[in-house]
Image 1 (tube, helix red, strand yellow):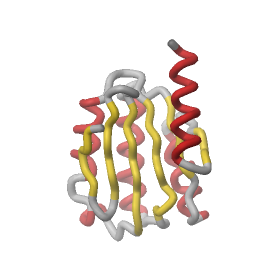
Image 2 (cartoon, helix red, strand yellow):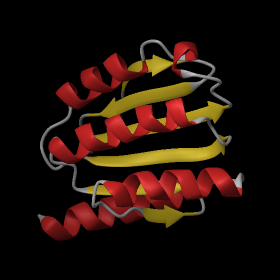
Image 3 (cartoon, helix red, strand yellow):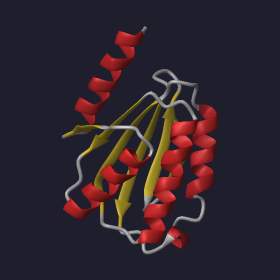
Image 4 (cartoon, one colour):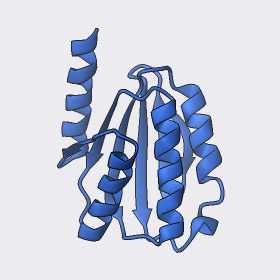
Length: 134
């Protein structure tokens, strides 16, 4: 596992063996200023990934965020769509408004996501989907 960034706001890692990016978002982001390297960290992890990569996103600890932060997430979602992502599994949020925000981002780029209750299930489903394609 390659750790691109792990801090109080997010974790971003890449597993070469599975060709999978792992994102964990924590807490409330007041503005993009609290995560100054978020965009460049994504650039770095996307560079590591091979075409057809998967994303397992853990949003359980994410809180509703302001529009400026949502716009940043939309920019990342667009980069993912341009980078030949194959599947996204997202671990459910506890904040219902944040659930709507995240779902809206994926729909906006024309990608759906598989909503799962926990990380283990997300791993299993993504592994099965990738195995079915090979």
